[in-house]
Length: 221
Image (cartoon, rainbow, N blue to C red; front, side):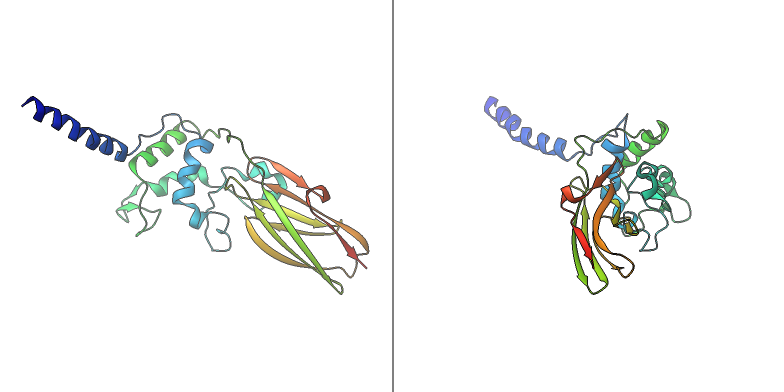
């Protein structure tokens, strides 16, 4: 009998560990945007409400809590992260949350409670741990009086990227999401060597890039 009892204790111990490991996490009591809310938004919302929101026709963009930190790079953009809770809650019309729409999986109870706690605490921003700056690579090709500029903007932390690329003093291109892009400039009214520079913002700070960061000059003949 003692042997049987010992066997039961040994047999149920791993099962208890598995059940504990599969239990949903509890809601965060003192959440911040950087540490607790943004990771939920990344996993549940940004495939529709991220950097592609404008071109995909979505009204709400949630990948930054506040575009104002990006200064003039954020002109014409706004962040609705602090207004998202009502569409995540139960709605009497659709008998469920408005977002994410079916058949997507609604937020789990602990996720909703974390966002409620964040809202109740007046949406504290928090600070990203060891935040990395966004990066930019640029390739240029001149054909006649036309300059084709291809670029790739990214962020090691997966943060959104707003940016502006300038060629000389008069030519510029602004973008509002990470990823690749291409733009053509007319060099007919330009002359001499034009320095390519850029400013990038990941929602936490603005960084400036020039030739020391691999951005070359363009020869407008």
